[in-house]
Amino acid sequence: MTTLRDLGENGLIQRFRALLPDDAPADLLTGIGDDCAVLRLGGEVLLVSCDASLENIHFQRRCMPGEGIGWKAAASAISDIAAMGGEARFLLVTIAAPSDTETAFLDDLFRGISGAAAHCGAVIAGGDTTRSPEGVVIDIMALGVAPGGRYMLRGGARPGDVLAVTGWPGLSAAGLLALQAGVEAPPLTEKHLHPLPRLAEGQWLARRESVHAMIDLSDGLLRDAGHIAEAAGIGADIDPDALPVSPAFREYGRLIGVDPRALVLSGGEEYELIIAVDGAAWAGLKKDFGAEFELELTAAGRFTELRGIRVAGEIPDETGFDHFRFG
Ligand SMILES: [Mg+2]
Image 1 (cartoon, rainbow, N blue to C red):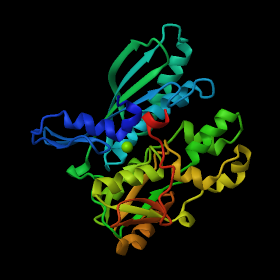
Image 2 (cartoon, rainbow, N blue to C red):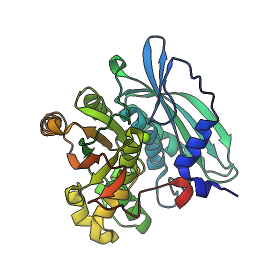
Image 3 (cartoon, helix red, strand yellow):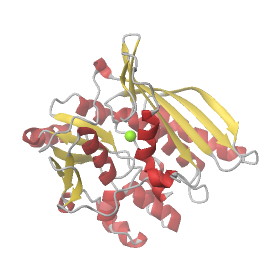
Image 4 (cartoon, rainbow, N blue to C red):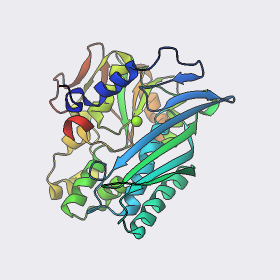
């Protein structure tokens, strides 16, 4: 008997997709398979995404404050709008919790969601609440607009494009390890509890002709680069010596006992952006980005004709997080 574990997350999505009718309406510009659905409604191009956060899968109450759990859940949904180059506008928030959940925790949780929404310029417009038999579940729908109708998909990458990433991937994953181990490491735990969706950066990048594809880093660099490559029908080769390793790893990496480069490759929930950039335009884009934002933009590899994701030419054994295989 085939189970979810055999299928994996992508297999499940493909299976559901096959059950849909072929004739999608013309105002559904992009359906299943990208960071957001793209819809044309009332003269606007809308970007819509939803994202679920489950206790003991995405967060653990024993080592995370309610406010941070809420902030991360909202940031995760809004980050999908950033990945398309959009502006975040509204959130619908569903919360399910067992009857004996302390109201103080739920207040903190909602303050976190509301704080992330305000930081991103989005407004909480409604939602749903329900009882859960076990564990807290947060589901957030984010609705945004594509400025001028322009948005960036995953599938435009071409062989020879530079694979670049913003910020310091792996920091959030290291923050989670620090929280679990009870280690004081503020630059790491702050990144895990209060990730900042790269909305302004995403909009700026989506306006550049030389940027061919974009995704947010939610499942790990290897896996999300793989999503771009797969959507484009190509591959990518990551240069392990070029990976952006945060200076904070030097200070705290030993305390939590991790190999920084392994976390940079596999750490999810980072909410940075991964892009495919025309090789000839890369140096200019990096310079212009640096003049506009106080954020690293690092070339970590190249997209290749050869399909699949490689690290220094080799197929890695760990390609990030798959909910059904590693759950
Ligand atoms: Mg995404």
